Length: 196
Image 1 (tube, one colour):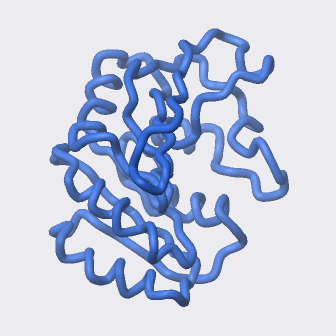
Image 2 (tube, helix red, strand yellow):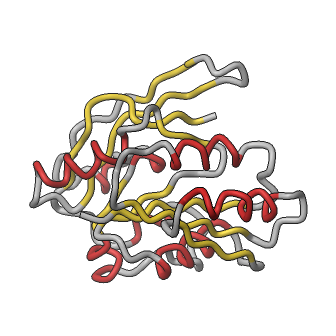
Image 3 (tube, rainbow, N blue to C red):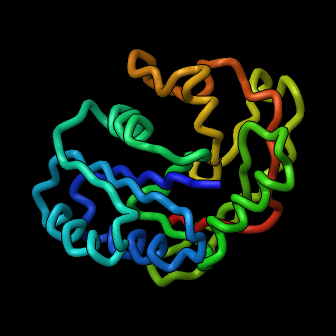
């Protein structure tokens, strides 16, 4: 199973290296990494260019103006060729080198799942965990009652984006929840992401 990880960024030179290194360390052999930069002017593009050869052909990237984060995410979705798509923000990183492989294993264990989500650690500037967001199992109808998976831990089958569409840029919030909710959502029950 191929997974596409998308990072969108704009003027992120101070945080992006940790993100790039985190993805580079993943043990998953069938990982496609996509970086969508919003025409940064702070050295971000040069940092991305430096990392392209380290990914040995598994990294695609563009740098051009966009209409904001969700437009950039939509560009990444259009570039993605994986069976599963997820987003890793430009100031976040994976908890360890097996996270992407664990996400794939969760999809393989739950073939009926449209999406998988997990837990999230909040990290301070010193790298210390200051809070852990513990995800809860999904129950049918939960989106209408305000339940949300932590965005950085949400990985969805590519087919769902094809079926329901991508982020609607005409809505200023709750962009992910404007389409019909997934009927099958799995969960990884340990921290898999670190949010700075």
